[in-house]
Each structure stands twice: as C-alpha cells, then as structure tokens.
Length: 360
Ligand code: SF4
Image 1 (spheres, helix red, strand yellow):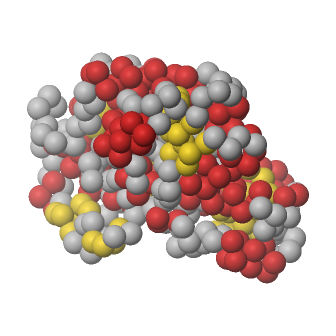
Image 2 (cartoon, protein in one colour):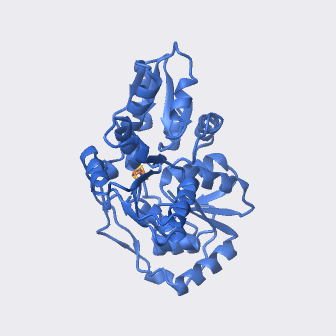
Image 3 (spheres, helix red, strand yellow):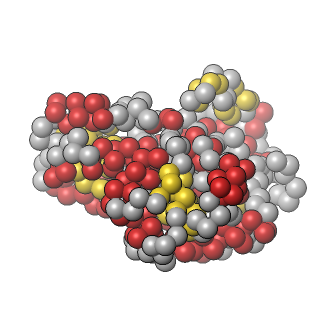
C-alpha cells in the first residue's frame, strides 16, 4: 500500500528502525520493525510526533504493554472504532491487526487511518477470502451471510450481517427461519451458534484462529483440574476464545466456573477478585490482556490457560513500528468506497442486535 496523503516528519530515532526477520507467525517468519526500546526517550518522541500530526493513538488489549501504556485509549476493536468515529483528531493510529483498522476506516471514512504495520494480519480473517465467500454464496444463492467481525473489509462487503461472539446467537436467531445461513469464518463459534439456536440449516465455514487452536479441550480441562478453586475468565471476543466457549458448552469444564466477560466486565471482575483476596484466576484469552488485569488487581495470580496464546500479529506493533508510523505517516489503511458502504451496513446491523460486545 502506498502512502499518499500523510506528510512526513523527521525523527532522530528513525535511523535506528529496521525490518528484522525472526518474528514467527503461524506459518513461518513474518518479521517486524525493530531497533527501538520502548523507554522514556521513545515515549517523549511519540508524544511529540503525535501532537505534530494531531493524531490519536488507539491500542487493542492484546498489544505489547509499552504500546498499551502510550496509547490514548486501550480497548477492544469495536470500542476503539467507536472512539475513532467520535474523535476530533486528524489522524487515527490504530495499534491492532489489519481488519480492525479497516473497521475503523469503514466507520470513519473521512478520517486518515494508519496502522503501524500493515502486515499485521489475522489468521482467522485470512481463513475466508472474498473470493471463497463469493463462490460459497453462488452455491447457496438464497442464503443469508453472517460473518464474525474478524473478517476483511472485502468479506464484510459480501455479508448481510456481522456478529461478535456476544451476539452471534441473537443475530442468527433473528433471521428468517426459511432462509439458509452461511456462517463464517470461525468453526467453533459456528458450532456454538448451531447448537444454541437448534437450527440445522446453518452452513459453517471451517476456519479458525490457527494461533490459538492450542486452547484445546484436554488442556483446558487439565488446567481447570490443576486449579480446582480457580474461576475461569473467558473474553469471548477473541477468536482464540471461541474454542473455549465451545468446550465450556460441551461440558468439558464445570459451567459454574466459567465467566464470559467483555473487557470492561473482566476488569471489574478482576477488581472484585482482588478485593475478595482470590488466589488464582485462569484466563482464556490472548496473553496481552493479562497486563491490564494485573494492573487493576496486582495480588491476584492471573494465569493464562495457554501461555503460548500470544498473537504474533498483534506483537508486530512494536515501539519501532509506532515511531515509524508517526514519523512517516505510514501505513495508511484504505477501503474502497463501494465495499465500505456495504460493509458499514453489515457492521451497523450487528451493532443493533442484542449485546454486541466489543469485537475482538
Ligand atoms: S488472536 Fe487469532 S483471531 Fe485474534 S487477531 Fe490474532 S490471529 Fe486473529
């Protein structure tokens, strides 16, 4: 993607930034911008550049701690997209993965949206392409398409209504009973929706978050057994947690111990756990969320169900990438107007149903 509209600003730190190999994704090396430590010098430079650009920095909960700490707002993707739509800033710097920055652009088409590394993708979003969806639709011409929020703008543009994990069941339950449904891309969420609605006319795409397919039934059951007094916090908006939702529904773990919590609820529950002097809480989501939980309740032992549940795409937004982004005005996110108009309808329908939660 070429940068066309954003002015460049100088920074003495910029010459230290380089593209380093060795940052591993699920299918091999994906590299990332490195060369800068997220210290006070860096933080001061980020603030200077941010002011020059009249930018607002938004960081997803799964970002590196130093990125979360320098951001103006930290949250889930939908909350951040809403902040983006309301901001007076000229430039939105979205520290998250690409489909999230696209969603911000879809909801704020007149603003400049930058992502510090445009290669920060999502294995779940990539598991259903627009071409594949178009072909699937052609096999079921009368079906309605329901897509999880972790999809590209192009897929959203071919979708009737998007959903988050929190409102997927309500979205599907509200659709006409005489229309088949194509549900994608997450197979775990699709299976959950099928079971909850009792509808057998839902076709589910066999996609998943490959990064976190590691939150498996046996692992979840083992961790729960090892910590018999521990509650289990699941943030349902992470693609990686959809398997945990599915497994809890299958009775792999006692549902009484399972708490499906949005980000805000998770932080509130963490505070309550801290005040109650709770020992261990198991957390089934991306490990970046632990930074915030430990911040509000430092005496509670928040233990990840899977400590390898770290999204390498989220971790591509390094201090070096953010500096480069603010100094050079890159990488700019653009969504074709026609696609954005259709995608916006699907997202707005999602927002109007039940409790949509925050998106991942
Ligand atoms: S954790 Fe999985 S679903 Fe979430 S952004 Fe990373 S790859 Fe995508």
